Image (tube, rainbow, N blue to C red; front, side):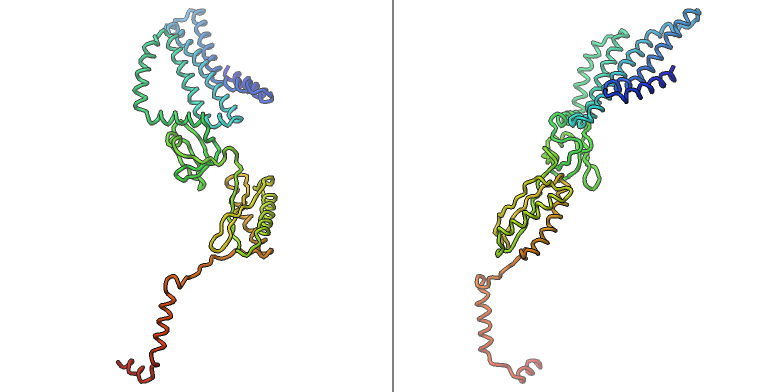
Length: 354
């Protein structure tokens, strides 16, 4: 029977894979273990029927067969519902950002509820009163909650992260402590973040929910890339702006990570010590792409400035001798040296001898 079950289920799975519906595949995928329990139940009933028909003395079978039948039926139902719910969460999470972020938590919560209800039904079916058990569970849960307060805090913080959705699996974020990385998993107790050097930061959910987070993928992955530039004071600023815009539009149009439809612009903002500074605003498709877009823009802008005769000045520093009274001291020293008579060879030899 087990071989027949495997052959039939394999055939049904191949048929449902070609179907455009999803529920039939989930239903068939959840059947293997429940069918195994039902086959065991059928075998037990058949064995009991044969023992009665042939008047076989099997006292243990007559005593415990009823209990075993209840256990097998309830186990088949619980396992079927559990696998069906887990499969539905896994399948629908591929099409939903919220479910993808909370898949692990939802699976754990649904499995705990289903198996807990199945255990209570089994105890009630066997004639065991579940009222004292429920009352003792209330007292026990209070003690467990006090003992596992940090764990429960992390769990409910994870639920809060899933419901509020400040971060999602796959987002690139920056923590207030400075770490940057991709969100790999939001679990029961902690959130796993893969950093740029390919190592993992494991943050407790409670600490993550209370910290300041920069999500570079929300509300969208595109982001602005400001580039600071300085030109000489003798430059024609209208000409500088025109050249910078031409270079920016060309880079955004030709670079693979630029956003060609972005309306780039130039803003002059500072009269600095040796240059007039302005900002060119670019646009990249993702956070990482901004480095390559900025690099390509700077190389092309430097080349165009050289062709157009636009100077990017070196820093200039002027020494104010009058303010520090250095000039007066220097001039007084020179005048004293002029008033002194020139020294002849004899005086020089005398000085050397002494």
